[in-house]
Amino acid sequence: MGNRKPIPPQVEINILLASARRCALCFGFEGDFTRKKGQIAHIDQDSSNPDEANLVYLCFEHHDEYDSSTSQSKGITQSELREYKKSLLAAISRGEHTRSDEPVQGIGTVQEFKNDNSGVQVNSGNTAIGHQTVYNQQASEFFDEVKNGVRTTYRRDPVTGALIVVSMSLA
Image 1 (cartoon, rainbow, N blue to C red):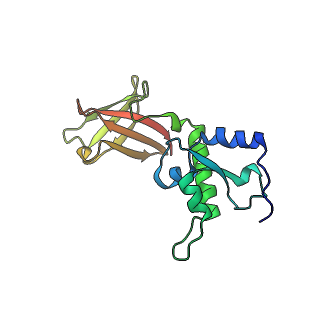
Image 2 (cartoon, rainbow, N blue to C red):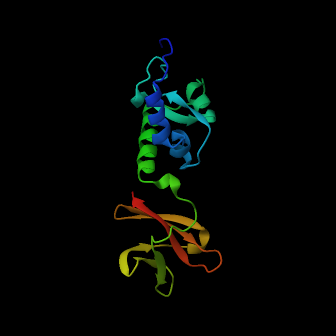
Image 3 (cartoon, helix red, strand yellow):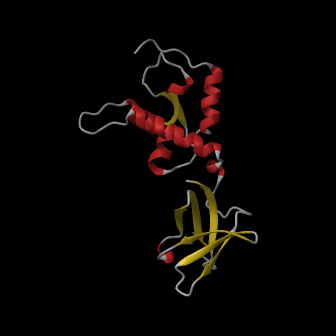
C-alpha cells in the first residue's frame, strides 16, 4: 500500500450519487436498501488508488469489517465486494432503492382464482401480464416470485387479505 491519495471531489460525488449512500454489503448480504452513514472504501484496500472503479460506499460497520483481518473466519473478498457493488448500482439505476413496503400505485392488482387459492393472476389495467403460482399464502405478509425472468413482490393487505403487487423488476 502506498501513501494515501485524496479522492478527487468529482469521483467522490459520483460514488455518493451512484450509491445513494446505500452500503454495498448491507445490500449484498441482506437486500437492505436503507440509507446509512458511512464512508467511501477502497476495494483493493490500497488508499493510494483513488480510481472510481476501486471505490465503494460502505456503512461504518461494514467498512470496519472489510478493512479488518481475522485469523479464524473467512473475510469479505474483493471479488465479492465488487459483485455486491455492481448489483447495488444496477438496482439503484432501476429505482429500487426508492420503493417502500407500501403498494406502488399503478403497478397492478392481483386477482385470486381457482377454488384452492393456489394461483394468482397479475393484471395491469385490463391486461393480464402473467400467472404466478403461490402456495401457503398465509405464511408470509410479503413474498417474491420469479417467473420468466421477472421478479414480482407481493404484499397481503392485512385488512382485506387481498394480494397487492408491490414491485416488478427483471430478475
